[in-house]
Length: 268
Ligand code: MLT
Image (cartoon, rainbow, N blue to C red; front, side, top):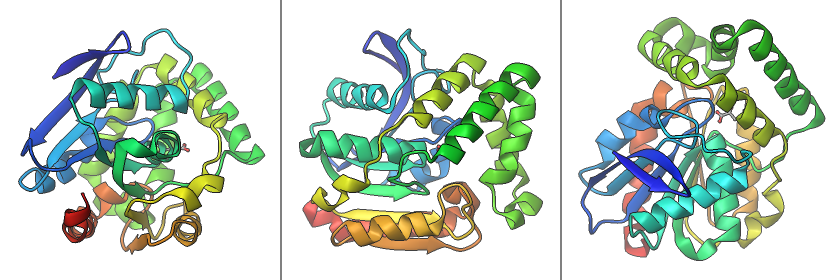
């Protein structure tokens, strides 16, 4: 489905019970909402589940503005308003987590719980910024397909590379379908994003933190750090998973998600 918000058409899905708590899934970079297919299927009988393509990704329009996490948060709030969702549960993976953390910092009254997956509160270090600039150069010079091949190795755990062929194909497909312009604009946005660590102690809603044991991009230590700072949060480290833990180990991921939502049901 498409909906127009902030002058762009956004591709989204909205399924499940309308009276139930709304859980909004926010994808990572450079993917799209289809990365959440298995979670939507598992949760739609008990919750209202929404997923959407961040601007420029999937089939959402890019618009003309410079990309930033703040702009992505503005889109998220406009989508919630358009769908008449006053308060939501957010589930964000990696870049989706950066968006969720920025959103709760600035609009705490709009969120009732967070699920932070394979993400971090720190800003890019100088080394990571340099890697992003190299990626921009490589995409310009060698194209998106080469970039997709190079990044896949980092997204998956070594054991997933040898068995998760469908998931790898799906991720490759998502990357190569992303326009060069969106890749470059998002890499720049990520490289200048603000840290959110200093505000974690102000989070007052239930928080579940999940991370693949072999996540090389946002490793378990980053998840542990957030867990220590967010009062009352739960931390779950997933076996057999790297950075894309929801696709690499959907069984454990979904049952952890559902247990968390079930246990907090009265607060939502
Ligand atoms: C993601 O999965 O969203 C990216 O790995 C985030 C990043 O590059 O920082």
